[in-house]
Amino acid sequence: MRKFCAKCAYIVILQFVLVAAGLANTLTLGEHGEVFAETDRYRVRFEHGVLVHFHNKLTQETYTLPPQGRSNGRSGLSIQHEEGEDDHSELIDDTWEVASKRLSPLSVEIAYHSDYSNYRPDYRFDKTVWIRISIDANTGDLVIQQHGISKHIISVMWGCGYLDNQQLDVILPASGGEIINAASEIPKRGFRGFEYPGRWAAQLAILQGGGGGFFVRSTDTTFRFKAVYHAPSGEHFGMSFKTHNFAPFRDKNEITSVEWRLNVYRGDWQVPAEIYRNWMETAFQPKQPPAWVKDLEVVIYAPYNPMDISILPLFAEHVNPSTTLLYIIGWYDPSRGLEPDYVPDPEFGDYLKAAHSYGFRVMPRITFHGCSPNSPLYPEFEKYQFRHPTRGHKLGYELNNPTYDYPTAYINPAAKAFRNYLVEQMKTLYETYPIDALHLDINTSVDNDANGLIDGLTAAEGNILLHQEFAEAMPGIVLGGEGVHEVTFFNTNLAQRPRRSYNKQPHPISSFLFSPWTIPYGFHVPNPDGEPELYRPFQEAYIVWNVLPTIRIRAPWMLREPHMVKTQGFLKSVRNGQSWEQTWNIDVGMDVVGDVNGDGIVNVLDLVVVANAFGETKPDLNGDGVVNILDLVAVANAFE
Image 1 (tube, rainbow, N blue to C red):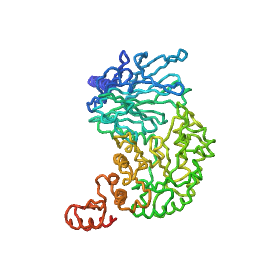
Image 2: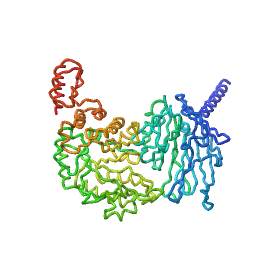
Image 3: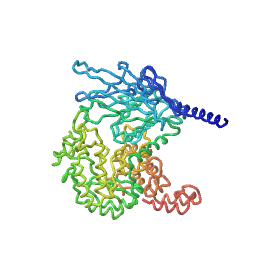
Image 4: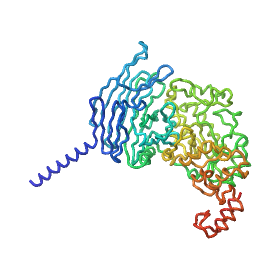
C-alpha cells in the first residue's frame, strides 16, 4: 500500500511538472486576431499583425510604449508588387478582411485579404497575406513567417511598433556596423532601410536596453534578398523586416518569407552577437586566414602611375616588410587590355620581385565581375549583365558618363562562360607573377537580377562559385574584397571597410561577427597630413571597428619631408608595435613615438628632456616604470 501511495504521489508530481512546463510557453489568440505569446523569458502582444508590446522577463524591462492609435506605418504588415516599371508597397489596414486560426498549441495564423483596384476596372486582383506566429519549444524563440499571394509579388514585410526611443539602441551589422537611437539624425524620407546582402551584412538586428534586450535574426542559408527598416516617430520607433522574391517578378504570384526568430537576453549586445556568430561559423564554415595575414601590421596603398621601385627601400625603413601588405591599384594598363583582360605594366614583374626581396606581401586589384563595354568580349557577356529588378536597365559603373574613359558593366558571376574566362586570366597571372593576395573590387555586389537564374544559379551562388574557383586556380592565394557580408566572408580573409558619411555612430558589431575570418583594412583612406578633415571621420570609425592600420603613400617625398608628421608618426607607431587603436589615434593627441617635448619631431631636444629625467617615472617610453638609458635608446631610434 505504501508503494502504491508513493507511486500515485510521483504521478501527481510529474503531472504538475509537465503542466508547469507546458504553461511556460503559451500562445493565445484573441477574437480580433490579437496574439499573446509568453515564455519564461518574454511576454509579447501582436495587434493587426504588428508586435506592439515586448517585455523581457530576464531583466524586467518593457521595450514598448502604450499604443497610440494604429502602429506607425513602416512597422506594419505590407505587401509589395510590381506594375509596369514601378513597384508599390501596401500597408495592411482596417479595410482588409481578417481571419485567424490556431494551427497547434504553439502556433497561430492570421490571414489578411483585400481586393485591389488602381482606378482601372480591367485591372483587379486579390491579395492575401498570412502571418504565422509560433513558439519554438526547443529554443524558446518566437518565430515569424509570412506567405503572400498577389499578382507580380515582390516582397512581404512585418514589424515591431511603439518601441521606446529613449530606452533602446538599435545595433546593426550594416554600413560597417552602427547604432541607431534617439540621438541619430532622422533622414528626410523618415526612415532608413538596409538591404541584404549588401549594406545589411548579416541577418541580425539587436535592440539593446539597459540590462539586456531582444534580437531578431534569420537562419536562412540560401541568401534570400531581405531588408530591415528603422522608422522613428516621436517618442517611439518601428522596426520592419522584409523578404523579397527573386526577380523577375512578372512570373511570381506568391511568396513565402524566411523564418524570423526573436528572443531576449540579459547583458550587453555581445550575448546575441556571439549566438549569431556561432551559427554563422557552423552554417558557412569560413576558412581561417593564413598566419601571415594574422600577423599583418599595416596596409599601404602604394603609389602607381608609374610603379616606382625606388620607394620600396623607403617603405622598408619605415615599416617591417614581413608584416606589411602593399595594395597595388595601377599595376595593369587599361589601354592595352580592357576588363576582364588585365595586361600587367612592363614594370610590374620587376616591382613584384623587388617587393618580395624585401619581404613585403603584394596585393593587386581587379574588378570582381567587371567587363568594359568597350571590350571586344562585351558582346559575348552583355546578355549576362545585371539588370535592375523592376526597371530592367543594365547595371554598372559610369555607364552613361561619356567623359569617363573606363566604364564598367557588371556581369552576373552566375554565368559560367564569364567565370571560366576570368578565372583562366587570373590563373595565368598567378603562374607568371606570384602575387600573395588578390583584391576583388565590388565583390559584395549581389543584385536581384531581372534576368533571373543564369545557368541555374542565383547571383549569390555565382558569387560564391567565382570566389571558390579563384582559390582553386591560384593555390595559396588570399582573397580580399570591397567590404564584406555573409555571401563573401567565408571565402575572403581580407576586406576593405568603407567609411560612409551616413553612418554617424559606428559600432563594432560587424567586426565582432566577421573579423575572426575576414580582417578589415581601410578603404581609400585620405592622407592624414594632406587631407586631415577628410581623414578624421575614417579615423574615428576605424578605431571603433578595429580596422587594420591603412595609409596611402602617393609619392616617395611623403616619407622624407619633415612636415609629414602624421604620416610618418603613423608608420613609426606601427613599427614600434603600438596597438591598432594607438596607431589610428596618432594625430588626435597621441604623441609621435619619441617626441617627448611635443614639437612634432624627434631630435636632440627630446634626448635632453629624457636625460634630465633619469630616475623619474616620466617620460617612460619603454614602459618599465622608470626613465633610464633604455628610453634614450628609444628616442635615438626614432630620430628623423
